[in-house]
Length: 306
Image 1 (cartoon, rainbow, N blue to C red):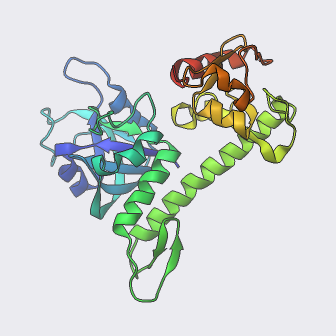
Image 2: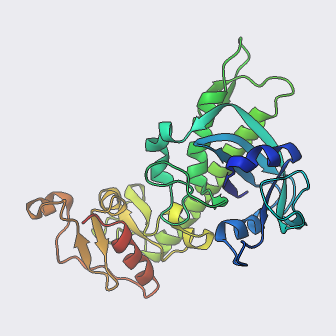
């Protein structure tokens, strides 16, 4: 299951009425747009979150893979009547209480990717049509949606990730939301488990900095975080380091990084007189593979705090 966020605006009501998303293949000057081309990635079973004027107003499930099709005759928001584009059939689930992005942005922002983020730094939506929604972002959005839209009624309850809820007869929203969250969490858990196993083998079960070997004290840290990585990069054994929890916190938080040669770079936010407290020093140099080089440089450029 993949997930996406569609920025609909004026097209929402037209597309909801016929149970689709649709976009042209090319713009008025004949150029392709990445946010339109992304519709070609949608497959049956994928989840689409619908953003309209600051709010997530619905979640839908794709009931088909994308197809190439003319614009439905009921749609008036595009000028060409016979315009050809990309179409996906959906089952819409509208939210009783929309999720306002600005109101919850402090919880959402940590999961936004640096590239192709659906939202800007000021919490407004980006221009474009369809954006990827990584699993960690999806989990957070689903939790927030659940808090707003699932309520306890009487004594009939079930356990949901964000609380205790009631499954009402003929209600498809709760099962859909529960399944969405469960699939996303399972994908993240299994992916990170596989990544850890790869790094335990790559680094011989030892912290790359201090050589601690106790497995319970070791963490597999991504150099290029999950939210910014492609599917392949997330599981790539060269996209990370096996570190003790102390050094992992420093690496994940951008307080230390490594260059293409494996030499440590320490953020200026850590005073030099405190290096010993954190079990680091300016002469640290780790053994690295050539394949680590790209990921180390990416981390140093984008994550290291200056």
